[in-house]
Amino acid sequence: MLVNAKYILEKAKQENYAIAHFNINNLEWTKFILEECEACKQPVILGVSEGAIRYMGGYHVVSDMVKALDKDLNITIPVVLHLDHGSSFDSCKKAALAGFTSVMIDASSYSLEENIAITKRVVEMAKIYNVTVEAEVGSVGGQEDGVANELAYAKVEDCITFVQKTGIDFLAPALGSVHGLYKGEPKLDFTRMQEIKEKTNLPLVLHGGTGIPDNMIMKSISCGICKVNINTELQIAFSHAVREGLKKDDSVYDPRKIMKMGEESIKNKIKEKLILLSNRKEHN
Ligand code: 13P
Image (tube, rainbow, N blue to C red; front, side):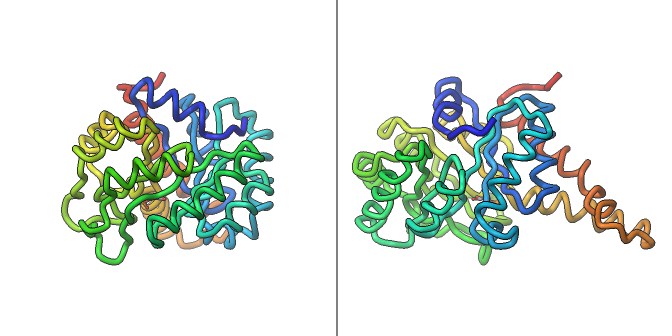
């Protein structure tokens, strides 16, 4: 069932666990993620970047594909279809009109005032469609250097002002995580995370989930993180398995067989993350 992220993230906040946000890239990934989350009986947030949306053909393709898989695979867990790092009001509106249930507006490269103004407009629009809104304060680093810029960490006062003025549903404060692989250990600011949680009382989001050690993920959850975004780690698990499979048998050419080579590996990684984030030892 497609839902917005409000209820599942509020529940996660109250019960001290986190929901997995996995990025999708094509039909096979979406199917593998839905099947594994259903098997583990865990809600999931399917994150789709603008690049992935362009790759798959457009907002409607993605939305209709997710809804059709949800139906034909008889998925019973709550599924959120979420625009990841929406770069403008227009992209968030396109997502909402196409049937996405949640959006992230990422205006973090603008000044705080501009970020607030753009995000506020998105929140007003999103309300009409019952779509939840995530936004970023500070700036999560990129793949280039694998180290977060300390000047880009979110400030507590900025987060409080931002939340009060925009009315967002959940907040991604940049606190030392980066997208892609890290150089050395991530330097997450847990003290600030805890303070932002207490002062905003919103579910917090941890971007750049790949490569953060399990103990830091657990600590983040205890400091208010309710949504953990994971992309690169699934890409690595998938491509490694496909590469190995093709090396073993270079006579394969059926694309279905090639995609299937990555299935077990990606599903194992999803299960591992769900167990970690849901704060439980084992699933039945
Ligand atoms: P990783 O690719 O580092 O897992 O980050 C994913 C992410 O934050 C998507 O928004």
